[in-house]
Image (cartoon, rainbow over the protein chains, first blue to last red):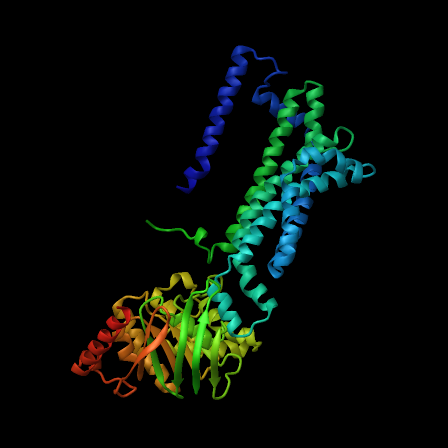
Length: 260
Length: 245
């Protein structure tokens, strides 16, 4: 079963790639429309250094934005849980930030913080994209603490700090981790969108490689950059799932294998 | 030990949950609060625990309980799923700031008392319903409180487990001379456990009837099957039917 889980998607991908290769070879599809997988492999090999450098630039911004989003989201959610008033005052602002399309405020952000340091603008945009799922899930998680346990802590005269650290935060952990899985992907998407909007010269990330190779009709290289982007997204998701599994497997219902 | 005078409680909906509740509990007594669901038994228990304030009336403790002086067992075991059994039992001591070694020793002592000394490192989700309740009882007793409040703790358990836990609870309470208030909707359970059964009625919730149970605190072996037990259960059930009507 475990082997099937691992090998069946690989088999499907291999089959699709072979079909793709055969199709392109047989119909002589021009390389500037659809390059064969072998050509993409070549492009990846030829431009390995520059592509890897770009992947690293994109990853670095994504991870920094993600870390700041988690820190900020958790901190704000904890603040909300301590004061209903602060939550009522600030939550609508967070929603406004979330629902405004990031592309629409990008030029403003570039002007405000990106003139002398474009990476700062990318970071801010990726952060805005990644921030909300953490805040929203963490807020829900802190509120979802078992009322019986809260009563128990009140009965024994626990301080707010004890209730926060011993009841609310552990209760919120599964919600936080699920928010982080969404937010990790959004941080990468946010970074790529920001790189596109910030335009050429501003960044050296994978989005810039995609634009550059598009302009030069190097479609194989464009595909290679796309492939790296997917791999980054998969790696982020995989790491966060592993973290979730590590932290929850001993006690949370979602991690308990049931024998039927 | 505890006297309630004309206690009333109204929630914000305006509905009177409790009205004119008078109650006296003596030291070392085991009092059962019996009544139909929705009659305010749990609300009364929460008022006594200090979790909610009454809207009217007075509550007077002969000697006000210190922090951790009241142990409470709720309807649900309310264990922390992210901590093992021992850590769960330690909770009240951790809140009070006791040292790790003392916490552990006291928790293990309580686990032995409820027969779970071999499950100290088990996770709550691996325990049966009855075992979870035993953990909750151990947790309520770990501060060695003089008063124990139980809110229908065994309602969700099967009959055999329930009887077993009733016997264990009686043994623990008589050994440590606890004063106990036990909420239940089962007449048989009330008769089996308590010295005194207080019958409640709903809308508005108030105590309407009181029955003394004349049986030694350590119940005799065959008490559950005796004619005396059956007669008292019959009497209380009749009063309960009247309360619901």
